[in-house]
Image 1 (tube, helix red, strand yellow):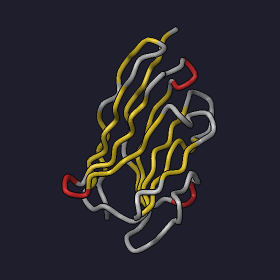
Image 2: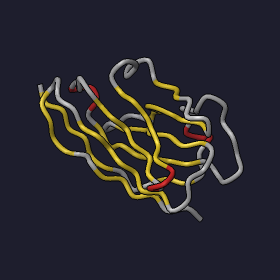
Image 3: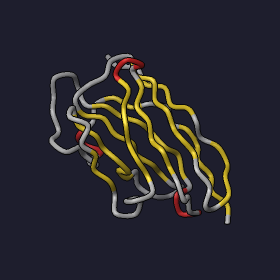
Length: 124
């Protein structure tokens, strides 16, 4: 079992920045960030593999950066140039230990463990 705890969400004006953190009880080879807006399906935002390669949704490319600090057992999501459409609950997730996802994955079905989420609200 893997426990994940997100933090760093909040309210910000359009154009602003936030950095989300996800403390993970056990880092794995495949980790990612997802978000869900009201009445919408959960969608992949960014994924990272064991080599540090990142994959991003088209809507966030060039604005968001995923990274990890294995010494701190923490996954990050740096979000810059935020837009109102970035508003939603943000979740971190990891795939089961020993499982790979080359280049990172944005597929919800790929992941086995999820955090409780942290709210991000971007106002115009």
